[in-house]
Image 1 (cartoon, rainbow, N blue to C red):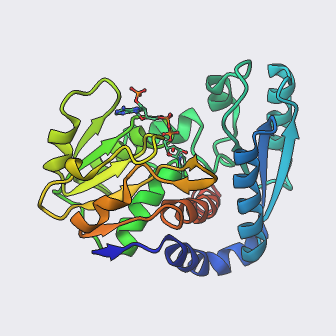
Image 2 (cartoon, protein in one colour):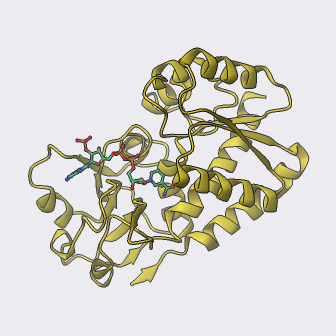
Amino acid sequence: MQKIDGNAISNMMLESLKNDIHAMRPVIAALFAGDDPSTLSYIKSKIKKGEKSGITVKLVQMESSCEEDIFLNQLEELNHDSSVHGIIVEKPLPPQISIKKIASLINPRKDIDCMSSENNGRLITDDFIIAPSTAMAVINALKFEGIKYESKKVSIIGRSEIVGKPLSLLFLSKNCGNATTTVLHSKSSCIKEETRRSDIIVAAIGNPSFVTRDYIGDNKPVLIDVGINYLNNKIVGDIDPECYEKSSAYTPVPGGIGPITVATLFENLIKLKQNYA
Ligand SMILES: NC(=O)c1ccc[n+]([C@@H]2O[C@H](COP(=O)([O-])OP(=O)(O)OC[C@H]3O[C@@H](n4cnc5c(N)ncnc54)[C@H](OP(=O)(O)O)[C@@H]3O)[C@@H](O)[C@H]2O)c1
């Protein structure tokens, strides 16, 4: 079985974006309310990767108790700040801040993680410019690895707005997918029956080693693990590593979809610039 090296794919993607990044000298604002250590560490990794690639990622950190109006005013300021080319609103958000209000307020031209109603709506009508970075990172992983998914049976476990749902639309898309797609979630029955018949299994659940060997058929599927879980001071995925030997290819955790997601975020920045210019 083939290990899909997310760091190598991320480096190749950044190399291909180098000239566009150099010409643009972009600045991304990561807007965040709170002090959740895992989110801050994820933002730091984006700052570091940005530095290496010629992109300035600046953290705009607000108090977790910050009122919704204040947070939305800050977002509006970034919308109008001509020195800022891309905005990411980092999750989790505190409960008083409505994600729906952010979706309608964030400037679609700066919305590099595809939160806006406009950019998300384009996924439904299949004329999208960008997609949420983690969902598109899965497609990028398969493309870079030369793994065909047209007409294949894909099972996605998880239906979140940032991963499972948009990924199902990408796999269904006539322009980039054409796969037969099943989306599974916590109320699904027969998850194993679906995954055991699948050519590609994507796990985006947030449950350490949820997918065990009995979820995998004898057809050597491709296993894509989106999960990032902290367990005993270690990062582990949603797929038990014991499954790998039953696959034809797999993404490890860490070092799989995570680094590709950051490169995809930077790719989204360039795509928005080129298509909305
Ligand atoms: N690699 C990256 O860059 C990256 C980026 C984002 C997220 N992640 C990771 O990906 C994972 C998923 O993130 P998310 O934001 O999509 O999570 P989420 O919003 O919590 O969604 C989790 C999904 O899993 C489903 N689920 C939960 N328990 C299940 C069960 N027992 N059986 C079947 N489905 C179940 C939920 O179903 P219901 O809808 O029915 O509740 C939900 O649709 C997390 O580990 C997160 O840290 C990684």
